[in-house]
Length: 622
Image 1 (tube, rainbow, N blue to C red):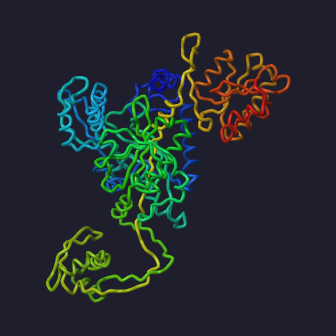
Image 2: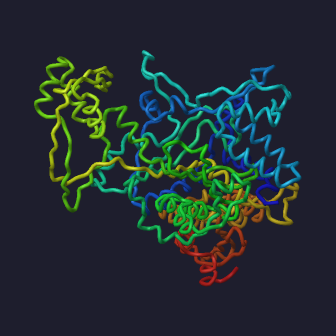
């Protein structure tokens, strides 16, 4: 059994007692799906996000924006959220106040059946159903629920038929209440709305990336602890590329990295993930393209850098039934926790869907204009000037708009219209700024001519590869993966000695400042030296804590280990003589002696580039 499963109760106790986070509005009884980060949790999250920015934003020279939390209805109508951002809800047929999220209820039932399954055939069947739980249609859910006798878990009553439940929080905008808005369900849409402005700031260069980090809101049917929240943080990247060229210049750097890849084929056959290099996965077409493969690999390296155990991390490909119709390929980074495999990062090739949708709905030109190195000759078909005049006369007030619609009609559609008109007439629905109208076109309206011109630019709508990080889920997984209990150790009350082995770069505090006892704590020299260490460390961008309580030094070490503080500096009687101190490393509990004046710079180096072994080699082991 993995430690993060065995010690879950101790972990929960430490997180609550040390106020990493607690339920929101707890003194009023709390509301499910909302959490408040306490000081160590907030610092940990901030440091983790800074490492994320270093790993992605700075490394790839991306651009970061901050858009609004409230979005007007037309934006989310165009993106599809108003119509399709739903989960299926089922109710207890006797007590309809009790309701459940259908896919999660089905997953729980499959987990129970898997625990009792004796044959490999049944295990494969249950795993396949579980994998598709959130991809079933309403009709398919009804069929599956009947087959496996899924009932209300508490009462065992029958369930009602699944009904779609939109997950967005609506909110009126302004005092009239007539303008409908929603709390944003994802940060991605704000990026798409501001894409063309960022492109201008990027000197019109492609490919490039835009990121946004912030709160999002989803009215979850059945929130669960810290892993299914109604308000949570996302960190999303939208990497804009040419649809016909999704190569990546840095792919060679990661191509040999081996990952646990759970392809759709393996899932549907009930097989476990396979270990493959990302280079092989792209070469064989398992992963659609180099850019997608590059971000899958970089995501793995980021997760590893913050303390996620590689053996408990896999990438699962979306099944055909899960994937949006417009998507080319999608993979989820899943991390194993005490609650099972948890989806923490979604990495998707969204093609051109979002920009096309917003361009059409807002009547904005979001196409990219590529300057060609060598001009090309292009022959185009368009209506003649004479035909344009005829259209203006025939359609009167709407003539100008109809003429523009004809001029912008794709060449194949214009040819089709000309053929249909022939020597008679043909009807078409023209989409105008004031709305669609039915138009009857005569031969004189569609007289055409071919023009051959030199073209120096070509327009195309960028494709998008999107890595989307669920910040809180990643943080929870990291807490489970870095938590351990000192073997054979407990305090005098029988409580275990809890430790978080956070990487020093993301630890909430980098250094604990500790006087050996109260005699040292009261000494003016300690006060002066401790103040100097704290000031220098703060100047280097690192936080510290000071514990000068009268508890024994061992107990104070344990307190700081429980906060995941990687280093502790102890001021003792020798300090008063020669201004040297001991520096202790959290996990090995070994110490070295060094000048107090060197502590800040050494801790800074340990948090950024130096190993503890290098420090031990330079200073006397205490």
